[in-house]
Image (cartoon, rainbow, N blue to C red; front, top):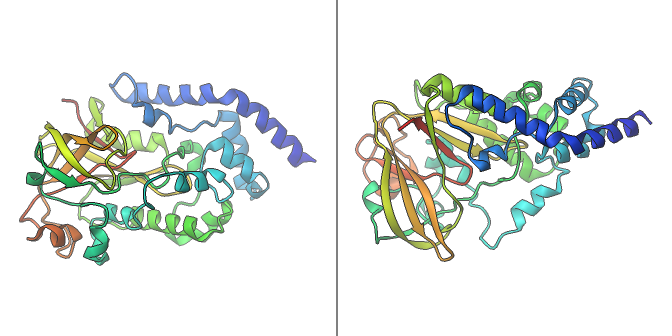
Length: 338
């Protein structure tokens, strides 16, 4: 009976919680970042949970009782538990081919060495030279999709109570009732990316809340910032014509922060700061419409794995060439204000 009463209370609170949670995110943004407001797609990832809901679900986790309310939790938090039908909808409701199986591997910058060249080139070039991106040229655009684009962050107070560690992966899966193989693979991939340091001295974080992400950016870049993201997934798997190419950040002495959305139960971003990165805005003339895409070019690859797929695709080796890639859906680049 108590479970039914609690569920009823949560449903009532959920009805009134959206604006309250959105205001909390907006307030945190305003207190830490000089930009007037976050991009709409970033705002949409703020947790919809109210402080009361957070307190209730936190208590359920601490008492190992979340399983009895898992469906309600997943729906109200807008996250991708195995019981959440949104997972199936997001992954299957598309006219594009299945999401490239190795997409998440790109964020490791070293494990991609194990991916066969023939597989890496399917659907477009994941890594390329800056000279290849010229107005009027035709390029094979890779898959720009986020594997699970709709999910929200958890509030930091709640995310901090969840074991986010490879060694505690089974415990994490039990909390969220994860039983399907695909979700297990996503969890493992994300934790591997987050726990494996690939470049010595690289400032990095796996932000499990919007607050953690903002704090990391402000700590490393300050409060006066610009944020850049690719407009849409248009052009994925197409041989598209390149339109205007504009450099928007080229200060090699003050590196930007690159944040990659990870496939996980709730929204997680792997953010890192790499030296000597230039940022470009590129118009991709796709079949349906023009996609205003963001391209990052790494001009210091000296610490990259010699067997990295980027060198197999483009020749040469670490430190000898720049390597460029597109910023995928929900990915972002933060720079000091221009």
